[in-house]
Length: 193
Image (cartoon, rainbow, N blue to C red):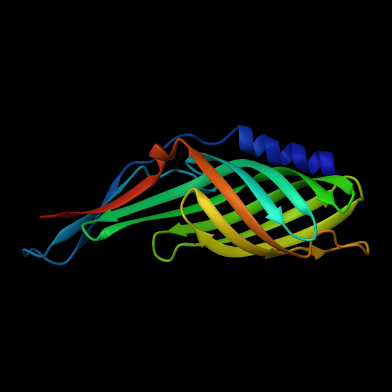
């Protein structure tokens, strides 16, 4: 069952839709000196497939010490104006982790979904579904925290879905992220007339 689910997820990760759709323009205001246009560039045809690759490394300090690596897709949006900039990302993918609980070690595989916003507010919300390969245990881990574009600080709690021994419970995660091909992100910016 798990192999079938992972095969489907990996298939979707390896065969994304790379094409981009046409650019668009939206007018704000009338035909006056205050008229400006919002230019939209690099709009993807399929936002679900995203417009860049996601890679991440994390350390989770909880009831266990956990080191993890994630790989997936990201749909990124950049907004820039005279007053500043903003990045918003929607990411999803798969992961692997190695953890140490007291004197025992274990491994998990996971799928995740994440929404990050940087600059205002600099926040990240994430949910992971973990499967412990050594103990046949399933976990659901929601996380909330601060996003500094390529660096996240998150609080999480791992809910044990089956079994009696929760090996994670409350946790604090430090995550480093890198977006491959982030030059393909959708761009929004004003153009004054």
